[in-house]
Length: 302
Image (tube, rainbow, N blue to C red; front, side):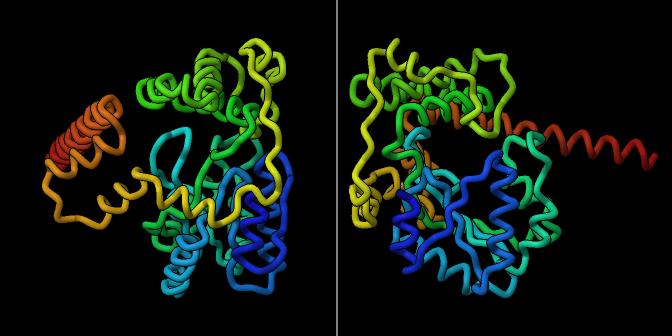
């Protein structure tokens, strides 16, 4: 589906990469970029549905800053996370592909190989930007097997989600089976002692047996034309979460009370409390770090 929307956006046939593990896909991506005649390469994962209007603004803003930028990314509306977060399609300058290729970590050494590759780029601090556009939907209209595998991996990587996403998924049990599958996958991942796989297809899970146990059948494939760009744009425009996110981003003069209210509407009561506690701990940690560094410098000087 992502391939169809990319073709609709670019008016040309996209290149599909199906290499595994993910590090091999990154090497192939760099090879495509190095052989391209265009200046920029737009890269999109298969679980993303691109908003044509937003991605056009994202690309235009990147090109406006082209003198200093080699990589750009925006934000996504994440179905499982229930909020807007960093992520989505990436725009790479093709001339930087040889350097990026050298920065790809060895297979299995990083839970986020692409992020590790970008961080290792010599000009990462000023050449990589995050633009304030919600450009895609993430994990919408996914098969149950893929939802389970992703939630399983999240359970292994992000146990802290037990206090944020898990309550939301449980609330949605009776409304949408996606969240029932996600909650089961997450809990199984938290309890698992197996090695974290960057390629979720390697997870040793019998999905058919699991769905049978949960008395659920796998979804039937959607027709190729079921989700076009107008459908994606409509979902974006109808999302209160996205509207609140843009209002929050575009209103720096909001009072503390207004910002808190916006965050509560976006995250809900429980997740807002968790966010507030986490922010307080981060601020406390920063103060403790400054004190420790200051004390160390003082004792050294003396």
